[in-house]
Amino acid sequence: MARAKKQIAKRAAARDERGNDRTVATNRRARREYEFIETLEAGIVLQGSEVKSLREGKAQLSEAYARVDDGEMWLFQMHIPPWQFATGFGAHDPDRKRKLLLHRDQIDELLGKTQQQSLTLIPVSLYFKDGRAKVQIALAKGRRLYDKRNLIMSRDAEREAARATKEINQWGGA
Picture 1 (spheres, one colour):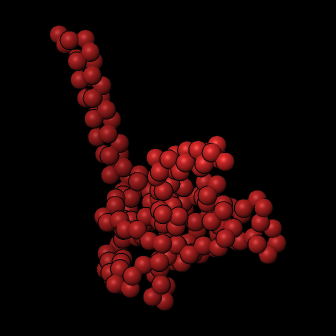
Picture 2: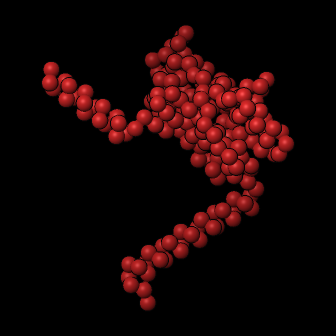
Picture 3: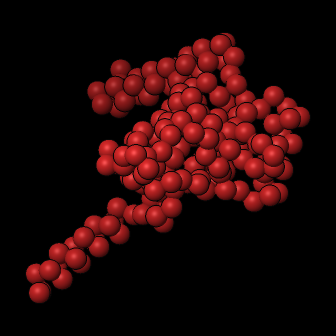
């Protein structure tokens, strides 16, 4: 009995150390193609087999976007593959639209910003927080090709400068 209690305590300590937040998927392509203006966290309505699949770390956000329809926020084209043990009635449609949970004033504010300016709503990351699935959504503006090139050039210049300072500090300079 004491051995079982030790194992339970060890697992609990490992869980506390790891934390309850666990990132399932990130949209790395969105960071390259969009400039984020504002980000916010939203809950997401999922079926049981979708939650099981997310806990296995399977989801794709690369083509996903959010939109307001009939006063509700929906997430489109997020792919969650079916859970391997869910068949028949328990399975879900991998590419169905999913409802996002936000306050009414947040939805109205985002609707106004997307209609007035040429902005879009992009999911940035999908994660678990206190056992509940959450999506971080960004109000974003698309980058032009020359903006992407300038961003890459500035990042490369910063990397080169950091590399040069590291070499100078390592070898004592000239």
